[in-house]
Length: 453
Image (cartoon, rainbow, N blue to C red; front, top):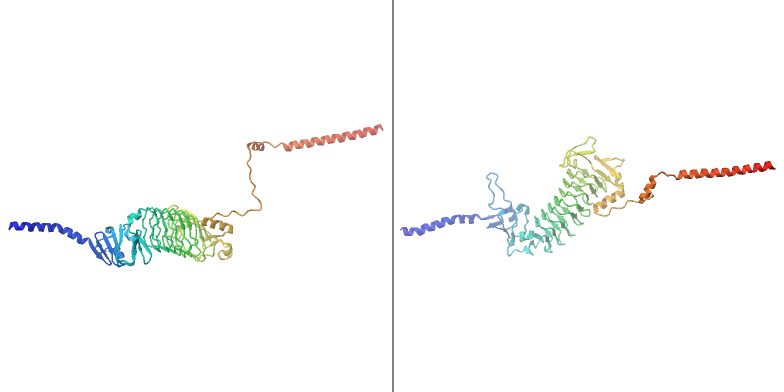
């Protein structure tokens, strides 16, 4: 009996040892609304699957999470055969992106072209099929030529990328698509580009120039915030209707910028902590400038209006803690100048709109000092903003005398007393004396001859 029991006991022991493995295997599989997880692979079955997986809420009462698995468990992302639309909720990945993306056979919408995942129906670039491999590349110039849209988060956190060639067919750049690309130094936007999403280039700290052309209509909030080395901004030809919230926040090197004629609104914090900004050029009438639009812009000294008066000004455009009794200065509340009096910027207007700005010769508008600007001064400011040669000053009737170098000897002679007038005076006296003597001698000779006769 004992002999027969030994194999049974041994089998039971083996089963007991395998129970944890079975439990682990069972716990490593999970399903949700439109997705399935197994051993590090997340398969998206329906269009809403990825969003549901990422939205892993925690129960406020029990503290338990809705799902056992999170983004940190995902190594491979599989786009299922029935998925036709997929939004890359890249921000929710919290910098932990899947190492590999696979398109399941039979999917008619998604494809992998030269290592890039794209939706062939919408012509949208989703991202790289092998993210770690692409993130090592410094210059990206192999994007599919027929893409029309750069998808959300497509190049999120590509820290080694210094440049990228965008196909000419692109009309939109998605939200956070180039966010935290800290080595990206230059981007040439296609002529047909119309839309740039929010936070698209946020914290691209090496970007140094921004050139937005005619077709750009919308740029989302914080799109270029944190571009701390960007010093040149050429956006006057764009068709923007507003300067969005925090659009140029922390662009420390911005000094001067000219807004498009179509831009009629500057939203709150649009120029947040642009420390070097000294000149803003507004080319639209009825401009609306919201509160805190120039938060901590303590060096803003002039706002040039080439058209009529603004529609409205925010009550507090700057970071302030009151103003001086005369109302000419505000007390700065910025980190660098806290407690210091800062002069309000002068609002400049042209002669063509003097009737709106100062119909009775006013020197203030809504509490701000105003002055008329000459055409020459305006041309010089516009040239600076556009990166063009500054016009030469108008020549005057009296030419400026040209200074000629003076030799050391001449300098010494100039420092000696000038004796020329004294010598000339003595010569004149001597000549006069000689003439007088000759006249005197002649008269005496006549008198003697008369006596002799």
